[in-house]
Amino acid sequence: MPKAFADKLNQCLDEIDAPSSTRERAAILSKSLDIPKQYAWSLLEGQQAPDQALLEKIATEFEVDIKWLSGEK
Image (cartoon, rainbow, N blue to C red; front, top):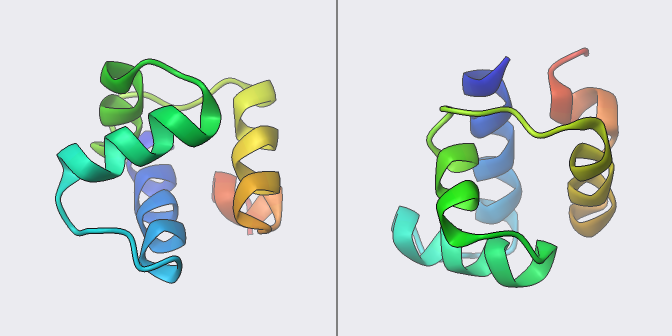
């Protein structure tokens, strides 16, 4: 799931015209979700999947369906 989630998360960032560099994307996520930059980086790289609470927060932040974001549909 982490890689599929990372792909969807990057699609969300593409939609808001975020810079393409992972470093800048991690900074944006860190600030908007109030998580450490290193954790944001690992989410973007597909090394970790978010817990349910963070998944819900991300879905709300980017106004996407949580099932889509998690790869369930």
